[in-house]
Length: 227
Ligand SMILES: *[C@@H]1O[C@H](CO)[C@@H](O)[C@H](O)[C@H]1NC(C)=O
Ligand SMILES: [Zn+2]
Image (tube, rainbow, N blue to C red; front, top):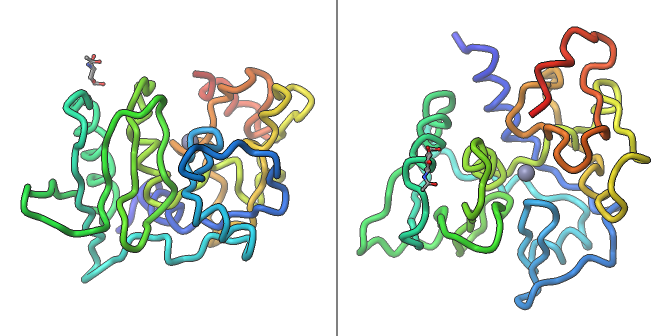
């Protein structure tokens, strides 16, 4: 039997399609051509391929073998808070078929999660053939590492779901100018799983404290979401 939250988390892994139609074209590229949008770091190749195809392909999901998604990882900066990281890893392992294994010194595989400290708390989105997915755990809030691993697994934010307007109200007028793209919708596949207000990929309205009303049709759900 699969618990509801487990199912949500697993299925949400598939919600990784990205629509760049509505993306701002004036984004700042970093020195290596990559683009940091909110807390998601897109490689130059990924960003350029969005412009060609509009969609992040299903290949951005980490491979699954014999019912298990084995993710290898490295901690490249000794300053990474391993207590916080291990809590995040344990949370994912407890609720999904994902298993994390720390790489040995001699392991030369190309695809793995690379935990490091860049300038902010952010992550690459999904699996990359031939290169690691970088997860920066600098200045993360308490649930930050769990959330960033969600991005590294290929997930977008819950409020980017294609059906979000049936479930939440986004007040664009209340969003800080220039931050609107963080509230873009994507043509996600939702597998008929209802919108998950409690998803760890749901914004707790941190960009503007009045920009999202969750569950407008059932006001009882409201108070649990402030953060
Ligand atoms: C490391 O993370 C743990 C768990 O979130 C936290 O309690 C602790 O204060 C953190 N340590 C530092 C040095 O930030
Ligand atoms: Zn995020």
